[in-house]
Figure 1 (tube, rainbow, N blue to C red):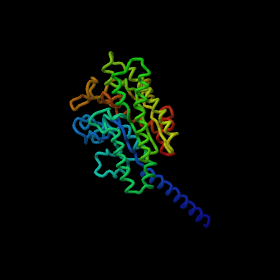
Figure 2: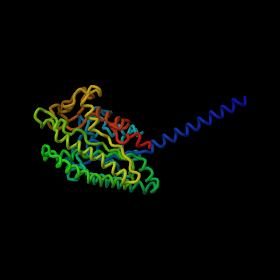
Figure 3: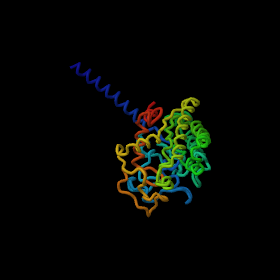
Figure 4: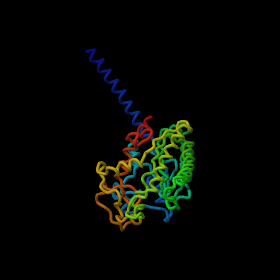
Length: 356
């Protein structure tokens, strides 16, 4: 009888240990936040609050696959990649747009500062929230957080959080019209000019408390429908693809440099150029049948608007509109970024970044 009581006591003790461990893990997950900076690939509604000339997607058929078929301002048919990443990080609902918050200290699950049309350079895009302003908005949030929680608690909270920065494509689009075919020197100079500014932006976010960065690289920009429509025969633009390849390679090198330079700086670089190349090489393996035409606005001219027709088999389309990927691509890209091998997520995936 005594042995049974001892066994029961040990079982209860171990059960309590397990419960407390799970509780601690759950608490850690729920206290983690995601902060987002960038362009239309991650804007979840900030541009809804800007003047009418700002790029917007707060109308149908945008959001046709979002819960409730709501056009939230996301430039896609449903969720964006950052929504899937936030959910995988343990955040049930994606961080809200900063401009929707009444109080800048709100945002226990994080805040999204991104603005469609913005670029690394403040001269890229008009009537948008520039990266400079996005970082100022985060500075306001961080200051209020310190005032509310105290310096140490705020620093700990931010150091555990994920900082997702998706920007650069619009800058490369802006330079695409002046590219000299075959001139690698010109492309390298463009890349250096943009990344010089980007490096300063990442340092500023770091100085405000960020430690864990997720940075998606630019994809095959020369193959988006809006670019193909201007190429005879609808082919990809090799010069823009080459510029994007050089940019994503240099971005990864910059992140390596910052990891050496800045104490505690950790990152996961999502190689969307490589992910796109893999899909292009074997689309059926990933469930895609249409890689060139957009689902919405099937002629690839102009933008998707309320009068546009759109496809019914959206999960088989790589592109939703003339510029942006479909929800299916965002979901796949997020999964490979969060759990994928080094081929797609360098030097570690986002899951390893957050758990380290």
